[in-house]
Image (cartoon, rainbow, N blue to C red):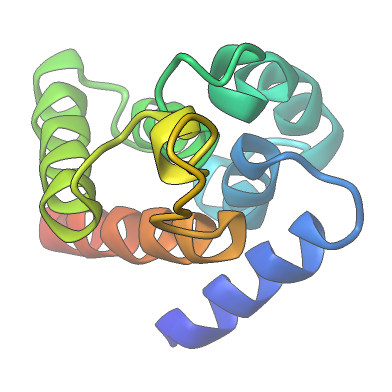
Length: 130
């Protein structure tokens, strides 16, 4: 059930995880990874690679999971491209500071919604592989 995975990710986000960690750590079972390892692995991806100038951390977390699950560069590239394209089509951008409205004062998408989007798009591409 996709909704429970989104709920788990939002719960982690509200417990101090950054967006990348919230997404990645919701997929421990699928990646066969210990949560602490995923947590540490994705800590630098939060807040658009720590500067808000980079790609949304939720997407980065999804990309890490895709790589761990697929273990195939071509499939992972296709999946990440799909996630990025869907995210950009829905939200108009994948850049953290633009999503947060840092320069415009207009928030395009909240962190919670970015996390939900990334989880949903990740689940969709992973389910296509089955």
